[in-house]
Structures are given as structure tokens and as C-alpha cells.
Image (cartoon, rainbow, N blue to C red; front, side, top):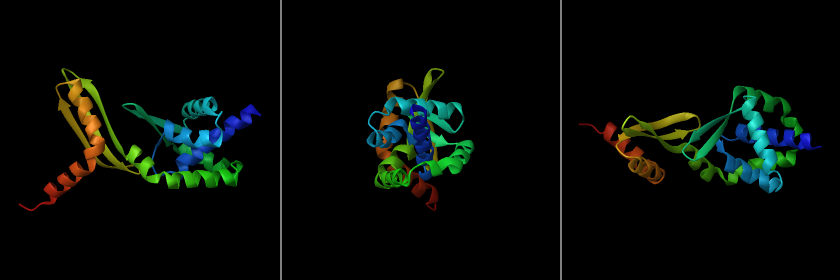
Length: 173
């Protein structure tokens, strides 16, 4: 019975990623699954690890968040086996994604990270919609503190910066 539960959690994860238009974090996935079954945390972790190892999902880590995306192989698997997910669970997933859409989208679409490069740090900030990159900026800064500050500020100021760039670029001389 335990194995069947693990298979169900993996199918739920795949189905959530299929029905979402953007990558999801572990916390976003676990929030739904733990509401569904509060004792499923370890099964969730095992399921995520097995899905990554099987190349059904792909993790992308930025700063303190890992985002999971469905791979082609994962899409094939969920299309083939989603009939094993009860319709009530599917509806609960769709409602969860609908109710959380703005929060989930914002967490996934706006990202920033930094890494050392010689004597400085490179900060990479991006805005994505679905899988399309709308804007990506890389900045070189002299200190780690500045890199962290830019990453932290990006979440609040990205729309303003994007709008400024578009306005300035399209402005006729």
C-alpha cells in the first residue's frame, strides 16, 4: 500500500506541473500535498527525488529556492497515467492552482541570483512568463553584500525597472 501512495504522490506532482504554466517550488507543491495528507512529507521528498532521478522533472535552483519543471518524459508519463488520479484530487489541484495563481506565478516568474566571478560578484535578475524570458539582466558588483541587496530588491522593483527600460528603449530621440 505504501508504494501505491508514493506512486500517487508522484502522479500528483506531475499533474500539478502539467496544469501549471510555470515551474513550482517544493513549498508550493508540498502546501497542496500536505493539505491533502498531512503525513506525506517524507513521501513527497522521496517522490521528488525519484522524479528527478528518472528525468520526469528538472530542478532549477536560484538562491534559496528550487523550482521544478516538467520534462518531455514527465509529460508523457502524466498523460499516460493521469487516469489513476481520482477526479476529486484533480479538481482540488486545479482549484489550488487557480486560487494561488498570482502568488505562485510571482514566485516563479521573478528570480534573482548571484555568484562569484574573480574579485567581484555577478548578479542575474530575470522576469519570465511561462517559459519565455521577458527580461534578463546581469550586473557585476564588487561585494557580496551589494549582490544580496540587489537580489532582495529585485522582487519589489522588477516591474518598475522593466517599465523604465521599455519606455526608454521605445522613446524616440
